[in-house]
Length: 348
Ligand code: NAD
Ligand code: LMR
Image (cartoon, rainbow, N blue to C red; front, side, top):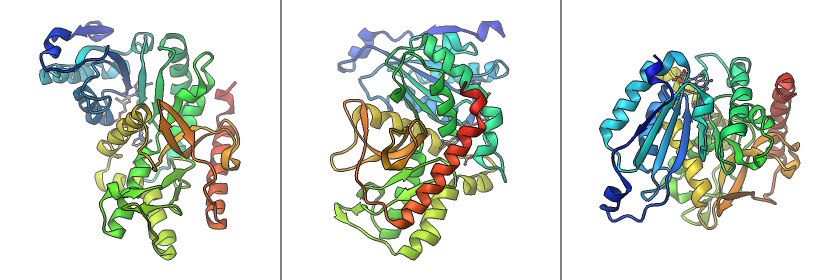
């Protein structure tokens, strides 16, 4: 077993041979993925390695982290990465040791956690998964690069991120985020389908709140093909909102496993947008530490509409909130406040 651990594998492809492709390469960055031997890991790692997340000029050193029992499987993933001969992969660290795993890491996709099964809510995972993030927070604080950007995927992702961020002493709190991009993408698909346009034509929508059935898909400012677009309110309340809120459970029912490829895709989208910015006139959804905007208690990890520029996100202010949406916001705020109370012992 030991031979799999803390193994740094230097890819034989040198910067000189990459230059052969005519690319102006940036210095490599270190990308950590926890739960690397799991199903999201398998759908995510190869796309990150190919350059899809950080671009074709950005070499990566992959830090693949999982639990000791998963090291044999992880070694299989490492062999497959090697067998892809990815031009952008400059090294692989495969480990069950978080000190090694998070050393000098610039980006962390925190997937490692238990998924829910049929009939469970994501909040039911808090007891098992919450404590993972206390430990991970300490390792990130002590070993990661000070500019690290983190997205928590493992559920319940908002409150896991809260637990994680609480351990951080000397990295800015705004570098710790959780993923609601999957919900955003799901909403975009439902709306495009309803309006008969392409998903990329749907803009100015957002997810507020928790990644849970109380999430609030907000569409009052939606545009389709750059024009204000509306859909009938009955469809919104009876079909659209419940479909987006329950999509994860529907996928579990159908696959007997939770979403993996779409989740990995959304995690990559989250980081890509955080690095490259949002399109002019559009926004995205990220769960971030609340600054009190929209009456959300400060410090909760809450999904907001955000614009991103130069690697920094800003909450979109002043969106009109109807009494209908305010009612939904109050519910998701209450759920996150209750989750925070439930993990109070992990926040000391
Ligand atoms: P999986 O069971 O296939 O894989 C999880 C992996 O994490 C396993 O290999 C396991 O050994 C590893 N792991 C567990 N604890 C760890 C730790 N402390 N450190 C490192 N690795 C650890 O599960 P999956 O389908 O990949 O899902 C992972 C998580 O992502 C689940 O909590 C799931 O609910 C969540 N998820 C979130 C979203 C979202 O939108 N936020 C979407 C889909 C799934
Ligand atoms: C999802 O939304 O697909 C994930 O959070 C997995 C789940 O438990 O629903």
